[in-house]
Amino acid sequence: MEGDIAEMGKFIGVGLTAIGMGGAAIGVGNIAGNFLSGALRNPSAAAGQTAMLFIGIAFAEALGIFSFLVALLLMFAV
Amino acid sequence: MRNKGTETVASESSGFEIKPMDQFEVKALFGGDVSWYTPTNVTLWMALTVLAASALMIFGARGRALVPSRAQSAAELAYGFVHNMVRDVAGHDAVRFFPHIFTLFMFVLFANLLGLIPFAFTTTSHIAVTAVLAFTVFLSVTALGFILNGAKFLGLFWVSSAPLALRPVLALIELISYFARPISHSIRLAGAMMAGHAVAKVFAGFAGALGAAFFVPVLAVTALYALELLVAVIQAYVFTILTCVYLRDALHPSH
Image 1 (cartoon, rainbow over the protein chains, first blue to last red):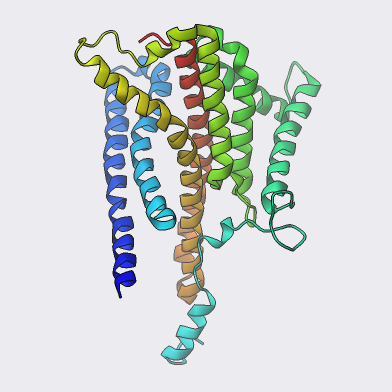
Image 2 (image 1 turned 90 degrees about the vertical axis):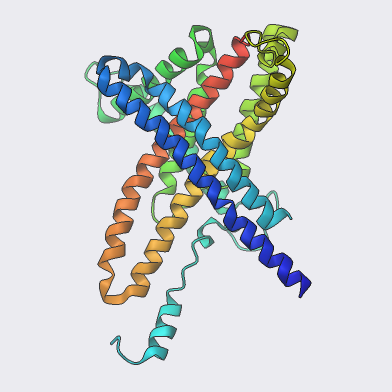
């Protein structure tokens, strides 16, 4: 019985880590949206900044990846 | 055929059991147990990746025609794309490391794209594979930073533009984020590939379970496949551009 409760808590925790994905989604959307609004104001400067766009997205995404890592650790390592 | 009662439907739909993670199983090619020397489907698809990438570059560069053939323009496009990326992101003095970065890009790109072939195995969906790539980058970039800059490389962690009282705190944060780099670098690629393929498999399972309405999930899988094609290229691009960013930090560590 105790093991069952621990197992249940593990799955609940893994499910809760999906909230982290929402945070990463907000960050990535923010970056892409701000890039687009900036690019529409000054389209000639946009092409040179796409690399920065992807670097920013990658860094924002990394925090979402850490929540995935926590989920993996909970599922398979704890 | 479908209205034979719930029991038949249940047993029929259990025939289309959705097992999205089965496609990532590592199997020995010639049967038997998997140990470190066994040729597996990972080995096979990694070899195919290397062959495909080499074939494109070798046959693409062979002709050197003034009016390029299709293979030559594809090879030139990839070469010029990565060359510009290295020069723009990592700087002019990073161009001497271009061969390594280009190899990484081609390997990841072809592994991602070959994984999209039905019944193929996506090698980059395994964290073990991407972690080796990411740790190679991490270790070589760190070693390079110390070799080229000596102790000045530690200036990367010492934010000299910040107030003095804040600097130790920032140094700690910078240190943690530096060591988190290979983790996020590897899991980003593996996670994106694994998630996309698992979602495609789940939708394909729906097509089997829905019977006459199979065309709805089939259309969804088609749209997902197009998205996956985009993700495969973008993840290869992101992997490479992050390598360039890390390389720039090693070459110019001052904040």
